[in-house]
Length: 93
Image (cartoon, rainbow, N blue to C red; front, side, top):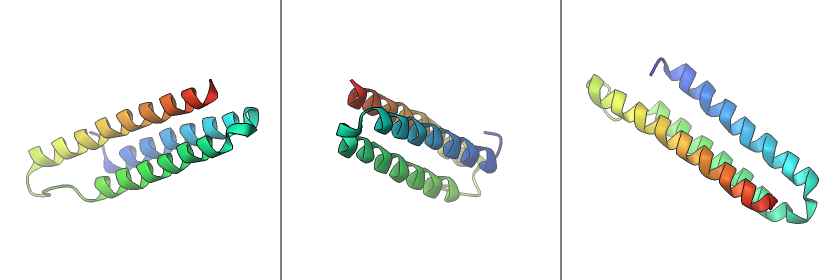
């Protein structure tokens, strides 16, 4: 991983994409507002939990564990974002 700052920018960028798509979906499907708002809330919760995990690595003295920690954060970020897009797609059907 390059840096903590880059990881946080990636988290913000991807969450912004989810929320933007959710608002577009809300514009085209106003009758499904409750489900779309739930996806937005999940995105905000995921962003906050990823930020918390990024700010607090497991052991700061062991480089191997720190790298594994940030790799797990990045993997969970991609899995979570993918899950949110799947939920948003299901709402739009």
